[in-house]
Every structure is written in C-alpha cells, then in structure tokens.
Image 1 (cartoon, rainbow, N blue to C red):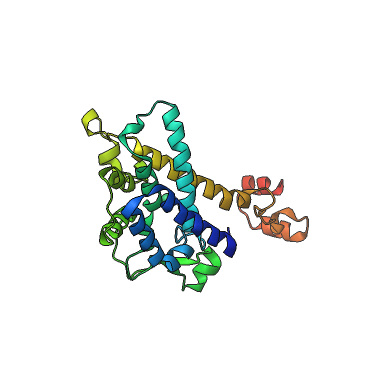
Image 2: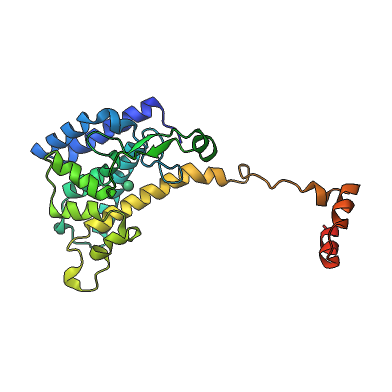
Length: 256
Ligand SMILES: [Fe+2]
C-alpha cells in the first residue's frame, strides 16, 4: 500500500489533533513537543520493517496509530454498553496508551529502528524496503516506548504503563504474568489493557486485509506452470516415460 503525500500530511494532523483533544494540560504540551521534535522521523516511519507485517510503508506508523485510536474509542463505547466498569480508567488514559503503544518502534534518540534496506536482493525478491537498524541494542517495543517517554519527562499512569506493556496481549508471552493470572487479586483491575489490545489487533488485521487480500484474489494468484514433458503428446513425453522403471508409476503418469 502506498499513501500519497497529502494522506501522510493529513494523517499527521489527525495524530497531533488526537493529542490536543484528549491529552490536556502540561502533559499534552510535553507530548506535542516530543512528537514535533521527532516529526521528520515519525511522519514517514513504517509500522514495521517487513512487508509481511502490517503497514510497512512510508507513513504506515502514523496511519496505524490513528486507526488504533479510532478503534480504541469505538471499543470504549462497546465495552461501556456491555456493562464494563468504566470508572477504573479514563478516556485520556485510553487515548494516551493508544497514541504511544508502538512508540518503541521509533528507535532511540539518535537511531531510527527501521532504515532503508541496503540488500538489493532482499529488496527485489522479498520486497523488503526496510531493515532493522543493528546500531540499536535489543529492547522490546513496549519497553523502549516507555523508556522514551520517561527520558523526555512525559509521565504516565500505572494504568497506561500496564496497557502499553501488554498491548500485544498473549501474542507476547512476556504478558502472561499480567493476563494469565488465575487468582482474582492478580488480574488487572481495569479493562483498559484488553480494550487497547483489541483495538490494536483490529487495526492490524484490517491493515493486513487492505495490503494482502487483493494479492490472493483469483486474478492475482500465479497459476502453476504447465509440465510440458508430461502433458504434451509429443515424443518427448514417451521419451521421458521410457526412463521410468516402475510400471505402476509409468501407467499413472501416462494417463495424465
Ligand atoms: Fe500497534
């Protein structure tokens, strides 16, 4: 998928508006300053370095985050209508967590996590336009995102920390300690992590469908090449079959 320059610009404006509308006060100002400081990097960032993952194209990161915010607000209404206790977290916490859930994909202060692919073969054959920047020390996406926030003096609540940490749900085994507890007192005291995870999963699934489902349509799937040796009625078929010792196999191939 490719976004136009206008779409990328308009996505960025929506991204900043989400902060202005949902994150009030000094924290909102600090968050806006943070994102404006790294604007040039973030505005064009892909959401992943491999095309098999979702939104691995210029502007894909902001497009994904905006979709997660939209889905999170819709999930909020759904959970509320089904009787979820909405007093255990705030809408600000939900939107803050959604905006920053994948921030760790940015890399660190100096280094971008996803850089242009230098291996021409991988670019041509695998369609990988990006590769992971090996200058960065390993860190999980949630850990790096939370580190970046505290490094820039942007505070987050306990609820936001757990939601960002567990946004991949049980797709990340590291989250089992939060999400697989059997004792009631060890379960999350708020549904915020589940709402964020559902919003992220929904957005990623929809992005997969936009990118990949058309490629699997009947018209786009490559048809298998014909085997001329076995299907042709020319002497080459007989010649090839004559070299097969097994008469059963020979009969089977002969009948094709
Ligand atoms: Fe995400």
